[in-house]
Each structure stands twice: as structure tokens, then as C-alpha cells.
Length: 75
View 1 (cartoon, rainbow, N blue to C red):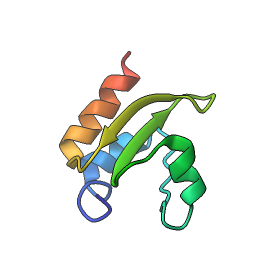
View 2: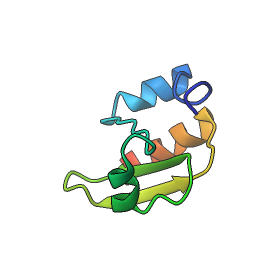
View 3: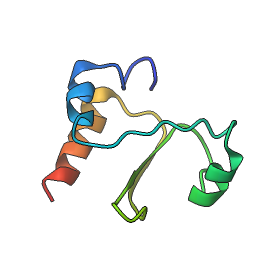
View 4: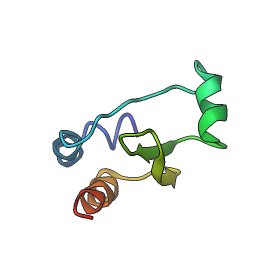
């Protein structure tokens, strides 16, 4: 996703609406445990209180992920 999804212009435009944090769970196993990450890649969307509101496991292309994030914003 680092080479295909995130650099995509459509995705970059959508990410302007979000606080984006990339965590390597190999470097931060505590985060893997805390969020119950069983495989990578995984994309989590958290609310302002840090509560998970959406989870996607596996690869998502830029169009699909940007569409999902846009849909969350319109809820």
C-alpha cells in the first residue's frame, strides 16, 4: 500500500481530510497487541477518542480506500 495506494493523487486528496499515522508493527509490537492486528496490512480508522470505527484487513487500492474514507466522512 505504501507504493501503490498512499502515493496515489486521489488518495492524497482524501488524506487531507484525515490525520494519517503509519505504524510498522514490527517496530511497535505493543501497538499490534493493543489494536489486535493479526496480519498486515491493516487500516484502522479511529474517532477523536481513539475508538476504532472501521477496520480493513488486507490490501486496498487507492480508489477503494479513498471511496471508503469519503463515505465515512459523509456519515
